[in-house]
Each structure stands twice: as C-alpha cells, then as structure tokens.
Image 1 (tube, rainbow, N blue to C red):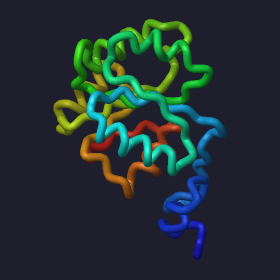
Image 2 (cartoon, rainbow, N blue to C red; image 1 turned 90 degrees about the vertical axis):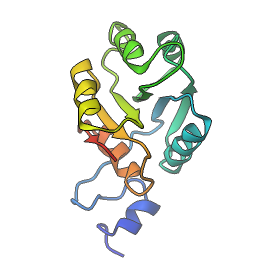
Image 3 (cartoon, helix red, strand yellow; image 1 turned 135 degrees about the vertical axis):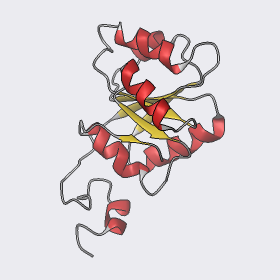
Image 4 (spheres, helix red, strand yellow; image 1 turned 120 degrees about the vertical axis):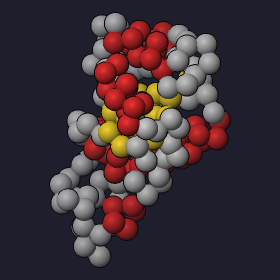
Amino acid sequence: MSANDPQDTARNPNAETQTGRKTAIPKDATVLVVEDNVANFVLIARMLGFLGIHCEWKTSGYEVVEYADTLPRLDLILMDIRLPYEDGYGALRKIRSSERLKSIPIVAVTAEASLEQMNKAREAGFDGFLGKPLDPDRFPDQIRRILAGEPVWEMS
C-alpha cells in the first residue's frame, strides 16, 4: 500500500494526504467541542479519538472562556453556531477578547451550511467552517489541515 493510499491515511493518522504533504497531528492535541446535540458530539469525539486527539465538551457558548481557561492545552475549538443560552457568535467574541485564548483557531460547525452562513462566519472572525452533517471520510483530513494551520471552509 502506498503512502498516498487513502486507506493507509485512515489507518495511520499521520500518513501523507493524497496531495503528498505530511500533516502530523501535534502530540497531546486537545480540541474543545462546543455542541449541544449529544449525538453530534459523540460522532465528533469518536472521529477525533480515532485521530488520537483528546477532546473536551461544552454544551453552550455560555461560560466557554471560563471553561477553556481550565484546560492545560487547547489546539482548536469546534463551535456549533446554534447553541442554547449563548450562540457561537457570542462565544467567539468572548474567546477573541481573552488574552490566553485569542489565537486559538475556532471553526464554525453548523447544520446551516450555506454560502450565506459561511460568509457570515468568515466576517465574524471564525478561522474555518464545516457544514453538517460531517463526512466521516473527509473529517480526519479536514482536522489535520486545520491543525496544520490551513484554513478550511467547506459546506459538507
């Protein structure tokens, strides 16, 4: 099996992608998933776990900064837009105003996957956009690319 074989990439999270570039996941990477739907969180957590990424969970944007401040390491925040108490946009503003957290990449994850919503997320200051339903075949590469600093703006 070659290094560019997609099945090899699925078995080896640090294999080269189809473009041939190495996209290693940082050791001990941590992702905060802000998602109010348990089934969506479980799917995301399983896919991140497959990649060897530790994830934390918050069910709303409310007090997300306070929670994130308790984490010893944080590499990425996957933020649902429609959340109870405080939506993803409000949480984004608060995170960006935190000195410790302002440079953490924050990717909008939403079922409202449209060009209009993607543009709104971009204008609000998100670092990327992933439309739901998430594609389990594409998600690992999307996360690798995001953690490597590549902006990912995809509706599905």
